[in-house]
Amino acid sequence: MKPGTGAKLLLLLLWAACGKCTRADGPSGYTSVIEVTNGGPWGDWAWPEMCPDGFFASGFSLKVERPQGIPGDDTALNGIRLHCARGNAELNTHVVESQSGRWGVWSEPLWCPGGGFLVAFSLRVEAPVTPGDNTAANNVRFRCSDGTELQGPGLAWGEFGDWSEPCPKGVCGLQTKIERPRGLRDDTAINDARFFCCRN
Image (cartoon, rainbow, N blue to C red; front, side, top):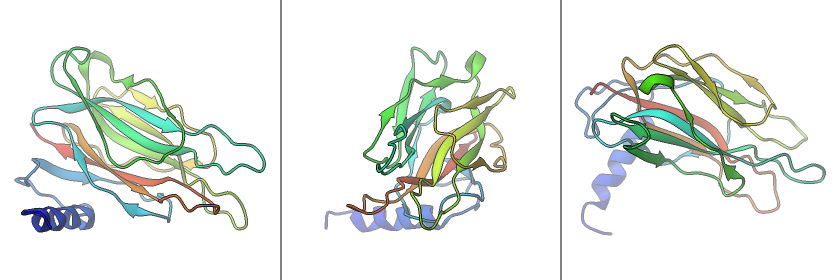
């Protein structure tokens, strides 16, 4: 094991267990975590990814697998990227991504208008079906700091749940819950997500 690996593993476990805890002076500078209650039941929480210090998420893009038809295996939402900005979003951006699934293609980014930030989210999730082809998370929508709502180009299965609590200033990181590929069995890829809020 490399020097420092144990400390990094412990930090990752603390992040995963954090839930709605608040840490004003955490090592990555986040102040709180926003979550929703309708995430899918499968998979494990991956590593968190944070915008650089002083950056906030002004836009996002999704990795989505199109419907596979019969007898294909649908997975729908496979990844979420945050497009972090400081100042002019088109000239000064940084993309962060927690673990993503292997299927689908990335969409073009959707941006908050006027240099605003993402502050809250809602997840579209298909409830488990037995027997059947489960997809879990299908789409994400975000609310911007000016109230604008941006809906991703995901699929239409399932329902959008309630909105998360808002970040006081803006989203600055993310963590995905993902089911690893299962071979010839039913795959779902992204099941849930949580986002981190920063204050400066």
